Length: 284
Image (cartoon, rainbow, N blue to C red):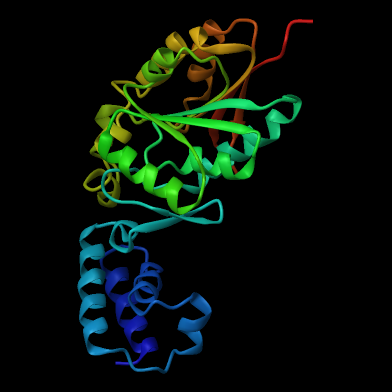
């Protein structure tokens, strides 16, 4: 079995199972430990029998719904590789846009910033912000010890210092007695009734605690808006990711909590409402 033959078999198999056939390339690269360029330059190379058997097994597992990222143990985010497993949500490209929005909006903050990522999961947001802006002193919270273990490993492998705190949403930050310049969060925002309608690769494998956001999907925004006023500095920025169609509701929730702040709904690259930013400058 040559490389190109293995890829053709896997692509057809996954297509028949209604899975993304690009997964074939990712899995074979993982098993052969090759870059994309190397894989295609060696397309007529024979695939070792043990690799072929392992590759076949993983392709069949993905056909059943197991996410490729969990099988290879990583996902690319903001140009870096992050460890992932079934204890954390797989980072999405839309969240890269949330980070971009934060970095663009903090240019008016001419000081070292105390930043927190609430519900950090894999640590992708917290670690990326720390790497992208050396003026950030980053904290990250998560309710699950298993998620924090993954986040800490990512921070260690990518060589940044992030202070990880276990606890429910804002509570660990309240207990820290600190005041924050920037808060970022990608909370669970899918209405409970819709979770079981998601694709198999999501609903059956990614942690439900990172998906379900209450009856209308807005529970975590209400809780954030209720608790954040007590820990924000006079000048601050809050950025949250939202579900499609939630922009107006989330905007209203934060406007009620921060009536003197500017609240902005921002669309993602596909033109769908995806982020809400809450910004307040110092009183003159």
